[in-house]
Image (cartoon, rainbow, N blue to C red; front, side, top):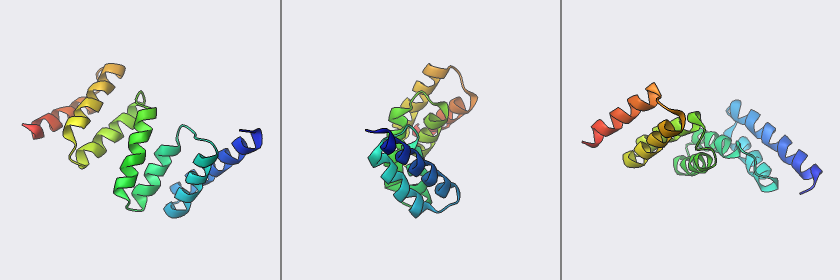
Length: 124
């Protein structure tokens, strides 16, 4: 990929991210998808998740969040968000695995431990 394409992808990504923050989700999604076609950037899936969530596209949003988690499973914020969304979808066992991995990587975390406890109580 040439420098011009990378610059264009960066600009589309930033524009899409800004549109998402302005709650213009449909436009944001379009720009982010274009940016991703040119060059995939680390946070693209996160912002696509936000845009799809804002549009009420729950299944598609979850798909992007899962991709984001797969790329950034070391990121505490992404791991917690993913675990919370998994619980909302009723995927408690998968959420437990995500939270356990989070604490293996980062050590004890009060919020993760609390969520883990709550999930395990629901699963009894």
